[in-house]
Structures are given as structure tokens and as C-alpha cells.
Image 1 (cartoon, helix red, strand yellow):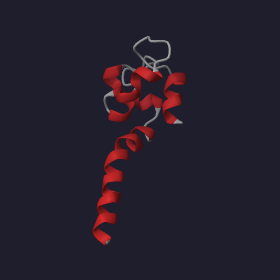
Image 2 (cartoon, rainbow, N blue to C red; image 1 turned 90 degrees about the vertical axis):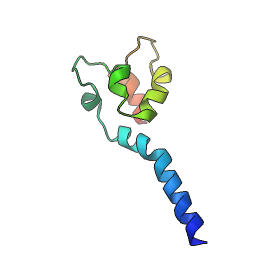
Image 3 (cartoon, rainbow, N blue to C red; image 1 turned 120 degrees about the vertical axis):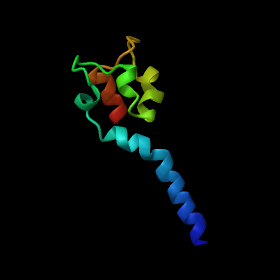
Image 4 (cartoon, helix red, strand yellow; image 1 turned 180 degrees about the horizontal axis):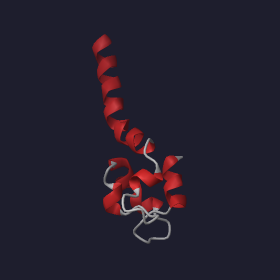
Length: 74
């Protein structure tokens, strides 16, 4: 009985770790070149962010503004 609980917990951690890691990063940490936008290549540090990139990019400019990135942090 203990093993399935441990495995389930490990699975949850593995699935949510990328999201937690990205959630801990600020916009400025992700904006490596300092241009005030996050590009797809800068977003690649987080699989969760890159997977949601197109949805978050509401103006379809192929980058994320601070306002667009804030929706990811919610």
C-alpha cells in the first residue's frame, strides 16, 4: 500500500516540476537579452512555458510581453 502512494507522489512531482521551476523565475530572469520581451528561445528553459507560449502570446508577435507572461504566473 505504501509503494503506490510513493510512486504516485513521485509521478506528480515529475509532472509539475517544470511548471514550478518556471513559476519561480521572474520575467527579468527569462529575458536574457534584456529587450523587455521573452522569445521562444528564452522560454525554452521551461517546458511548461514553451508548451503554453502560443496561447500566452495573445498578440501573436512571437514573443511574450510582461503582461502576457503574467498570465503564465497565475
